[in-house]
Length: 308
Image (cartoon, rainbow, N blue to C red; front, top):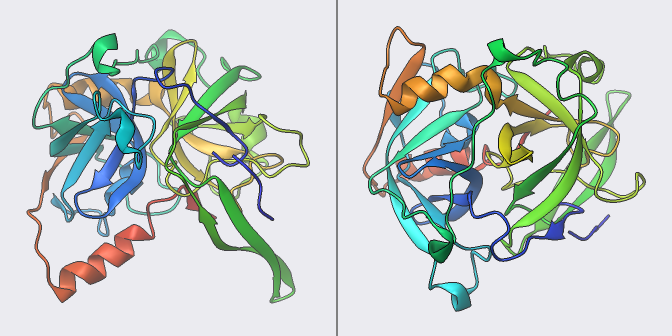
């Protein structure tokens, strides 16, 4: 199967989503999405950091963000493109490097502040209200939102019989690294739980993709992790994981519910670590050796929305 499109999405206009950024490894390029929440801070998914141990103190790969552009591989719009290195990373203390861990959210502090404004094609997005101010488990059910990402626009799959079970195997895909957008329909956590064995807790939310007809493959895919789901100009979700095959037509994708982590984000931006449930991670300097490259390849496999 080779569909067009985030998969099945449509190309965003040049200045339509100036808060969306690409999170990059310094010499490998784009691997996750992110969203600007302040001139100093970007929000992304914790699993994008390639962590391997719950008590890890450092991110093993230097990170940077690229903002101000919708075409990561196109050199014609460099007038607003900007690259900024990441200084440090904040993750929830409860997060573990597992496929369906709660707290799949990270705050990136930049080494230099971003210049915000339409002339730079970079803006910040508003955060949602914290969860204590609304019935957050059902408040957005049936709402139509938008998800954006620079990830794969096609994914070839095949069905494989193993142990008397039919499994979807991902064979590989293609991306132009152009920002894509797609409509989603948010569902309640109760309904979402019927699709997954792992717990869909209050820090998560789920959505079907509804950009194309139901019989069309459409969904978030490799390279879309960490990108935002936006409702009424607020970032309500961060792409976390989905079923294999990059198809959210009949089985929803899971997002980190930003409102549930409002106070984590607030404490991270104030560098209030420790008792506030916030962990600060350093960025390890780049070292080229065999051990590093092995870690690099392991981390590379964690860049896409976790498949289960």
